[in-house]
Length: 570
Image (cartoon, rainbow, N blue to C red):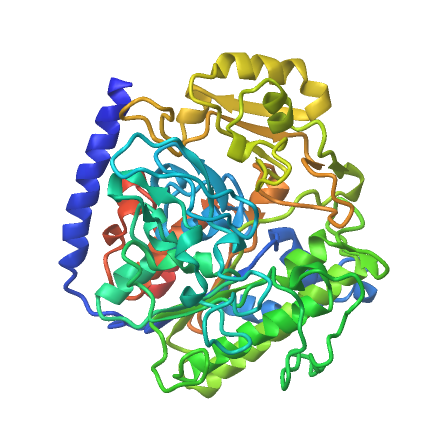
């Protein structure tokens, strides 16, 4: 433990020095050839999805290509075909990697629903079931599951997240309910807002501090963490709640011109992301917000300026990959080569239409030539091979350990009114204080067949890429005790409405699209391994600033994508 305390102490010193260094930036934002960076995350989209849609694949669209706008973009882009997302490949650490340049080891973000031994429960129960509980200022924490999903909304059934006086679609920071935030007893039991939950600064914060105008559009109010500590890194944040109830959207049409009033798909649909048709309306309102920003307005159309850095995430492709919509169709793939189902093909075509609209808007605003356009994904989706999918919500690592009284109650799947364990196609496990990690591992290995065990990480095999976790002083309170990655296709759920998921370490989970484009670029394909966390320092450098102003970049020696730097220097 002493060695780990020394590492943490050195890291703390690094953060202090980096903060001072970052504040001393002397270059101005966008002083070079690149004045704007537009970052797009097509959540779930693999590199093979782009290969197939740009080349064509037998069995889809008569074998012809079906993403002409992305294919055209690639003619002046660097195409990284071996790009790896965060591990775990959940959206929360996935976005943190894009925004900070760091892994969970540095950012402290392992999952949107995770665990922290140094915090206490929220004041009231969150919308997703994390129970409220006590917190005594200055007292020893009891530890708690951390909810940074839709559960912290004032009202997660509403598209605007329940923000007081907000318009129908106006979700954002005002939608966060402070009573639903986990609390820090060392800070007088103050609620920990998402932007203070991340431990490092972000590219948005660095660029904002250097005088740049910043904006981001995402799926939950909690993803406002991208602004970084203090919550001051974003000038314009927009996040209609994707898990809210579907409602008519007066005056809104999809990017293909289909009205979103009345509701396109009414039968048995609980949220925007459970319907192939409705998710297109949801993504459309975010694209229209982005088009406003390209035109020098806020997302809602008020006068502003074109952001130095901005962007959004798409949900349509992920829905096309993972949803089995009862009475409609099943999405996903037809084989291990990535042949899309008709539903997935339609969603890829839809997002490609959006890319075309975005490029056209950049050209119309006369900023296309000085904009670096990055198309990537927070995560992939698994399995691509439909024959490998197994949904088992009974024999999960957390369930087995809970029956042995080794899991905190807030994380226990046996807590029927709770938020549940951190399990998708991965199992991220925090044990009760005093529980034996080796004993827990032994139990899991004895049940290897039942849980579809692929690999298990604990102790040194886990600490190698994360921090030493535990309850002792100097231990990282967020590092899990055990991570279980099951066999490809095994998902720890009983869901019949899903045919895939993400969060795991498998290739299908982590291999994602990455195109970095500018009209001045010569087309290039890069097969060497790169990571999505390299995007953050690349953006900062492209805008004329020092990438080491990012604390995670210094802590982890995250490298700028050299091919991008080379093309920009031509």
